[in-house]
Image (cartoon, rainbow, N blue to C red; front, side, top):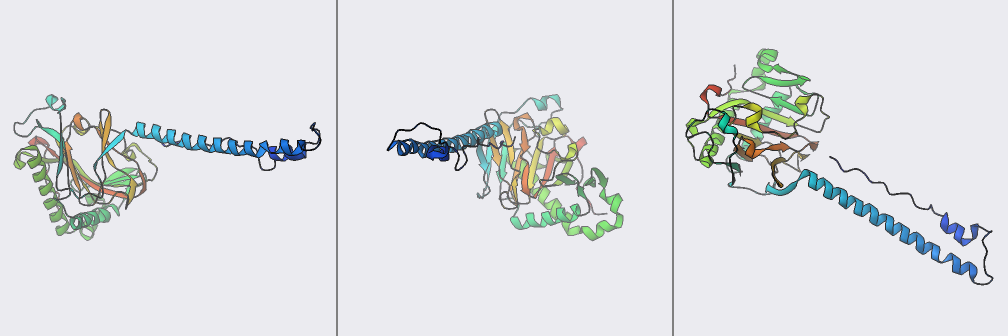
Length: 324
């Protein structure tokens, strides 16, 4: 909720009460001699005190509004700041019961749960190349609202208030947008993220399968037009998608430089943990309720990222995208 603007009550205008005290009201009873001067002096002081009181009220009101906003947002700790270069940061959290309602795959289904961040898996240069793939693909469409997606696997592309299959919709034109090198880089990045997740959670990389949806996202501050544009609601990936066991995000732009707002927020009981995106940064986490999360609304600029998710269930696995 945005802080409401507080408007201080308007005080006496210049020349109002002070002017009356100086003799504008000629009907006042006065003592001869110094009476006029003695009655005139307290008024400017009253004005100064009133102005000071109003100023303090506005400042205090602003601080209270900020405090209320901070309490509502619940942001208490930055897990990964944009200015940091993290080799590896991992926080273990107790697993939720979400996985119990699905078939368990020994050696893969999470028993160790948590969240990690690393800037050492994908370079900034590679992230910039990946971003250019997203920019070219999304140049073919884009949502009327603030959130657009591009899924190279299914072909789903935001277009106005709907989605189209870009491979069918644009046909041979796709060959002019993407190259085999683009898709090879995509596969390589996916594999490295998969290996990093497996290492962090002590499982075999071969037990993980890419699952849908896996997609690029482009978010700006345009007003949402459909529910698909409302990306900021808290959610749990395992509950939302079912097949997800491990989720990762590769950020393709920089917080506070390319966009404002748009931080990733883990919503923990009593306090939140935020990740400030930077190009090449990978965040990853187990997909259950232990990692309830949301994304802050983007206030300005454009935020690019790619969501890459994995399942332990081979029936829910998908192949890498192929340029056809």
